[in-house]
Image 1 (cartoon, rainbow, N blue to C red):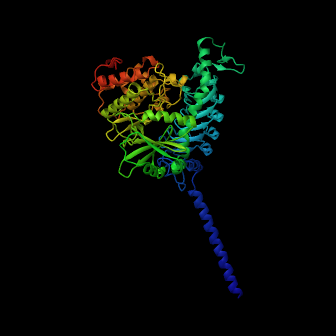
Image 2 (tube, rainbow, N blue to C red):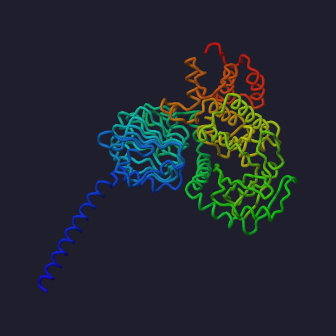
Length: 594
């Protein structure tokens, strides 16, 4: 019995020894296979992304390091992350504080996505950073003063977001800063004039209605109510009067601009929730209004289809709402734009405009078929165009648009806009001409869209409206400064659109911004160097130099800083037909000097 117990005890001890050994081996294995701290920081970033094009789905926690992940670059020896580059990947989510743990990160490129919330202060811990590119997102909140800790930073671009507050004085102490862009946000207060920030021009700050300082030649109001730039006596005469006049409207302009911004921001952040609640939105008290009698659908049939829509039917997001694809039983397809009501006054204004817009039919305009008036939303029914948007064709799908296609698209867009300006009564200012508002049919014919919320001109003499709209990068200088939209501000936006089609790059492309330009500044630089033809997309086949020279000359006139020097859209169409479709020497640009 004793011997049996002894043998049993011996077996138990041996089992425990084996278990202990197995546990140690497992722990050692887990330690070897566990993701690195840099990888953990990036996985925190991934976990907060609610949607993307799949670029970061292959990031795996089972990997020992993130060095083979898409968009990630590491040091070959240390395996530390030195660059994170994920541009144009539809990333939607916040930037986590864990990014601050990437203390060997030199380059952060996350521009042209749908990122939102604030820039984490912990980013100031990444003291090895040399370049930060976060432009063209939906970032909000103040610029962290901790970014002044990035002593090696050379390039900073956080333009085209929703940032608020003052520009931190600490940024002026970045001694290596060579490019700086905070344009087109909602920043306020005096631009710091100490340090390197004093050397940057107004291009770095434009589009912030409440900024002031020497860099943008706008005087600041001190606490005593006096105007000062901080470097001399208060200016007198015209400048002071203009500032006082402008101050009366800036608050209202900023509020409307914020409303437009948040409209699309909320879709980016909460779009899935919104789409799932669509059936509730159209359920009670909804009514259908059709503008043309050629649609054989009863209201109940359309409402039934609307109630079946969900996030799988979303095909886009505009500045005023979400766009869905609506398939009818008879095979007809429509695009449904859902616009959330802002207030009762806006609702009445919108109904009044729809009565006019519903009667407009033109070959180069997207046809508005009708709308559903629900208790919580306006649901606009448009013809569906299978070619998608020009923005998608140029920048997302990788379509290789040849020269003839690009010219036809430009001409079609010009004719649609000219119809709004010259043939509609009352005339219509679009106010948001951009590539995502130019839709394409199956034959790549252009249609101007999203003019349903354009402010109709009531004063036939002044043709002026003070409703702020538009997209940064396409806005005319005088519009950003005063908030006054005219037909000539549309012409400027069209000129930017032409340059976008020619170059294949967005107006605020990094390659321009790094040199201190937008696409208009880049064009002017190339013309000064007699290299204007270099603006054309190198991947474009079949370029005709005569037509190219004519298009450059037309675009140059359209984007003139002086509204009086810009041609009307009717004149633009005439020039396109006479000089681009049948090339001949341009009256604006001497191509022989190129």
